[in-house]
Image (tube, rainbow, N blue to C red):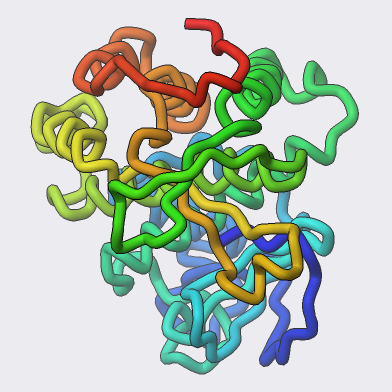
Length: 297
C-alpha cells in the first residue's frame, strides 16, 4: 500500500536497503558467496525465476525498511521519506531485523514484497528530474504514466461499498489521488504477477519466462475477467476518510491491456511479442466515464 502522507508510526527497527538481505543466516553481515545483501536478495529472486529487471534500477541506500506489528495492512510505502514499512511476519524469525528469505515466504508474502518494491521503484524514477538520464525504457514508462493518470485515473468509477461491486459512482480525483490510484493499480498487477508465478511453480520448466506460458496467460485472462486487477486510493477529503481509508476502483475501471503490455516490457523485460500475447488475452473494451479524457490506443 502506498502511503502519501507521513504518519506517526511506532517503528520497531530501521534497516537501510543495503541491509535488506533475505539472508539464509541472520548473523552473517553479507550474503552467500560474499555477495552484498542487496545482490543476495536479487540472486534469491533469480533463483526462484522471478523478474528482477526493475529491482536492479533501485540503488542501495535509496530507501529505509522498517518492521512493525501491523494490523490494518501487510505493508505500507511512504515516498516522502523513501520508507517501506512491513509487517513483522515478513522479517527473519519475526524478529524485525532483516527480511525473511524469499524461499521461506508464502506466495502472498512474496507478492506483497514485490508490490512494495514497485512503489520504491516508482518513487526512485520519479525523484529524478530527467527521465532520459535513466534510459529510454524508463523515460517511456514515465511518459506513459503521466498520460494514463490524466486519461484513465483522473476521472474514475469506484465501488463505494466493496461488497456491492454492481453499485458504482463516478469520482473526479485530485492529482494526488489519481497518482495513487495509478500506482496502486500497477503495484497490484506486479504483486499478482509474482504470486501467480509462484503458484504455478516459479521458474518455467520450458526455459521461458512465466508470463510467456499458457498457464500464466490463462490466469491473467481469468483475473481480468473477474475484475481482480483493480487499484485504490486514499481519499483526500477528511470527512470521507472518517468513513473509509481506501476507495476501490470498480471492476469496470480495472487495469487495461495497454498498461499490462507496457509494464511487462519495462519492468519484467518481456519481449514485444510476449507482452502482446498478454495484451491479447485481456478483454479489450473498457468503458470510462463520459467525463474522462480519451486515452491513446
